[in-house]
Length: 168
Image (cartoon, helix red, strand yellow):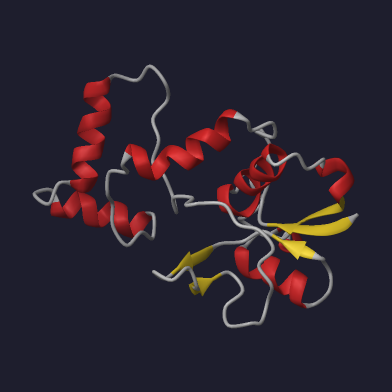
């Protein structure tokens, strides 16, 4: 009966992946959470938990080589990590099934190829990315395993822009 703070119904790290992980571990999510609060951002999830508006929250953490958070959605606040799943890629530019493999390779090459500096830089700025790389199958394997069991894929629009509390 915990009140759970989530980023958004479409957020990988802030909703979908963690819920799939908990379901895979046998948790009945309908009984576990009495309320789902969608906060619109990782910072807002942390604030909801720290302010007592939620009992638990889902956000991200970048871990160092010893498994300690070096950067996290809760900043420098003192929290207790009760479960984790990952790695969850920050963002993925994905193509639909059946799209021409040539087209996929062209887009991938445009983003990763150092010879196409202007296009890569424009995409980096547009997506506020530090850069682009081709993920390895090994890196995506944990995510692929969770996605196969995902029950909560949603067609709901995301609430990130604007966050729910700022809607008119």
